[in-house]
Image (cartoon, rainbow, N blue to C red; front, side, top):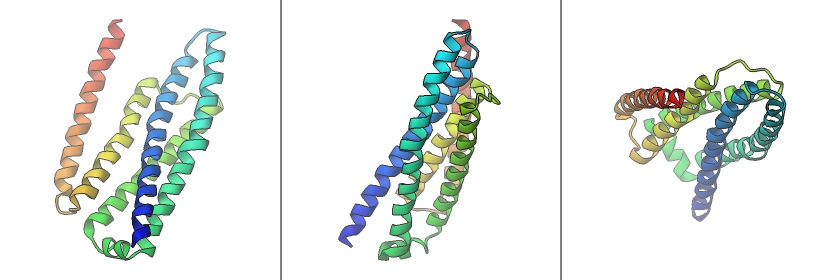
Amino acid sequence: MEYYNYLKSLHLIFVITWFAGLFYIVRLFVYQIEANEKPSPEKEILQAQYKIMAYRLWYIITWPSAVLASIFAFWMLFFTDAGSVWMKMPWMHVKLGFVFLLYLYHLKCHQIFKQLQNDEVKYSNNFMRLWNEGATIILFAVVFLVVLKSAINWIYGVIGIILFSVLIMLGFRFYKRIREKK
């Protein structure tokens, strides 16, 4: 059981770096899209720099963190006594559902990353600013599930996440108006 705490620590470290990568990659997407609207030569200089930054972040930090977080989670869930107990708890099933959503979010970010690396701009910078909140919502849901360990109260959590999302949207609109006035 002693090694369980090491597994848990490593899992948490890589979850944190995975989320950091997801938060920052979408911010880089915003910058890449905004750079696309700049005049030459500024456009080409910025795009080249953001591509390098995104590539390094995505392949050196974000993808390895996602894989390692998953390996340590799998190890804890299926090869420890605590994991076998947790897999019987409803809150863990709900949490794993959110982890599945996180992987879908990650894969969509990968698709956007590839498009931007090929100079294909399919989304607006405003869309990307909103898209950036997806990881935040998933993070909130997972943290509350893990801390409260309650699948029954997840309904309240979902209502809270929806309200939180509405607040984020309102904040985004407010920030957009401030930016447009400048």
